[in-house]
Length: 113
Image (tube, rainbow, N blue to C red):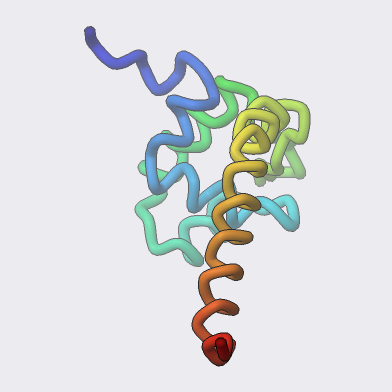
């Protein structure tokens, strides 16, 4: 079965490493394209393309500030990604608990009989 287009939904959009890097960079504050280009070391056409995909699937929003376009995270667009990854939280907590038990059992002296 062919893979869905990256513009189909948020999950396909974040499958790309560069788009995830852009989202991470935008996580704390709104930024212009030029700053994203400079700080991530990607070409301007590439950043613009990735931002368009992220905007089309609702993960980022943009606004014009004079001649610049500023991009920021869209919390409502990110929500489905967050809710899906939360389903694995119980699994990871269980795994961490098991690791802790194993580590603690190895640091305890053997029981005397």
